Image 1: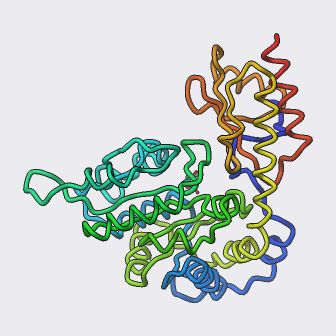
Image 2: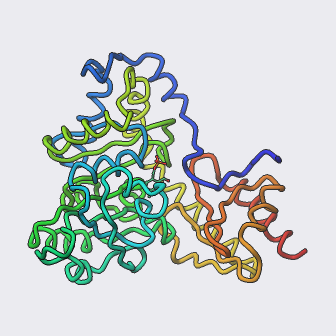
Image 3: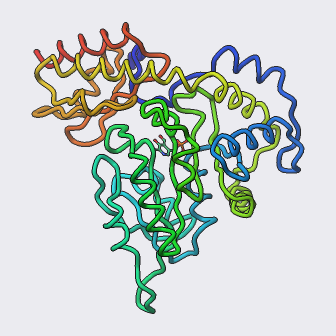
Length: 344
Ligand SMILES: Cc1ncc(COP(=O)(O)O)c(C=O)c1O
């Protein structure tokens, strides 16, 4: 296999920075399952404060963060309302059925945003024949729509529906900080409309491992229990949490560079004239490309043979994700490789 010299498959390919490696080397650690790791505690407190919540929990992955959060706020057999392209529904290996044991009620969003009126209509009435609706699940940014930012007003309206109907709200904020940088709206503003929020350190923020869950203390205590039975309780995880603290200090603002790279890539790919790309739809670090006549898997394989990584997300949909290891040079490589493949 040709080595990928321009890897646009995902922002999860990012490696820790020099500052993270130094922070790991000097981290003060202990057994976190016994409550002894001061660095993990600092990261959890920092995350909770940043999002205006009582408490936080460090978990190994975004998937575990979402599944713990849902399990801690639902009962098996409940129904949750979720956008049909949401990561939690599509890409977590059937986790909803395995971990919380809930059934999804999928609604079609607009650029990833659920319609609050449709959400309200989908909440089940109290009736012995139907499941209980216990949670509404949002995603910020919304991966399936190409990293769109769900507007704050949608969060606010969905919160109002949820409060009126006694339903809780979870946000899969794997790329919440991309949304903050793109919209200029602080994370705490989105979080205030949610009961629970997860965010990932190991995507554009460049950490090797880790995500956080934030919410009320009693909820976080329940998540801690779920994390333990899922096998996600870690021991000297302060080495990883140390990277998270560096990320929150120094890696958020630079996401703007990834967004600029993504917009530039979209414009350049559109200019080839053989792919369907909407540069105006690129709000953050994700570019979805429609390959028209040719198969996305074939184009992905041909790009990989030229050292360019891009993932086929459907029969004719190709995804490019920008991050700190791809800039102008890698954009040039990707565009010239795509142009030469498509003109052959
Ligand atoms: C929107 C979204 N949510 C959740 C996750 C899950 O994160 P992880 O891969 O750390 O389990 C991802 C991963 O790409 C994601 O894109």
